[in-house]
Image (cartoon, rainbow, N blue to C red; front, side, top):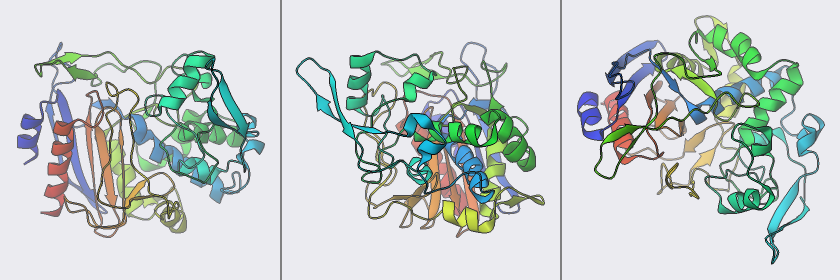
Length: 372
């Protein structure tokens, strides 16, 4: 099923894995790392996992909450001075100058982890793009690229955003070390994620990003999310499907894998609890459809959000149970974690723009296999 779905998807390469609490049920790689070299994709090929980074950084933040070094509901401005005096964008004057007002309440770590802080993304929200056009477009990967006014008061709405980049900076502020150093010691090492980390350049042999031309022919599109001014907690990691599958298994096991505990069972349960009701989470619009198309995993469900994950309240069309956790990376990588069934899966590919129908069909086939 997966091989047939991959062939129909017209992807350069992909890895699919299905796991349960006890181990790996399925793992398979197809295609090539790039169309120039024609090097075959292996199960342990490295990929830019992009926004799949967010769940791992959210786990790191929750470790620090449990250690008493961060607080979910205290004003985060005490840890991150850049967020101490948030301003809400109300519009633009006749000259295009942004109009701002003070936010009604402080931003908290819980707001950041649930994407309810009021922040946005330039490629999703036209008003953020307009704001940067007015004040000057920041360099990609710079801290200036995540400094922006809020689109609404904290807690009032759900919008996908740079919030997890700020979570990563909060981890650094609370620990005194870089995000990568902290995660290497406290997340990757105990989980056995030996080939995941922040890199200054794309590692040799890693899968490369592709696009398709109008006739559907694949072509290389050099894109690299790392190597900037800071280690991006929202999307800077490079890793492998087997590494990410170990994280999925740890979440299925309540925060423990191979005798190493990375979070308490209560902490894992809190991460998987819908934090945003009655708001609906999960829909992303697009200000740059050539980078990310409008996307909604479950358009017919009132989806929620935990501390780092999308949550479906009803059974998914491909079999996942209510209360499952999921999200994705911008280069068409996807995962899900189903605590009720004790199953999860990971699919990694490197194709732009996000939300590609072929990639989604391939991921859907992987999920159906898990529940068959």
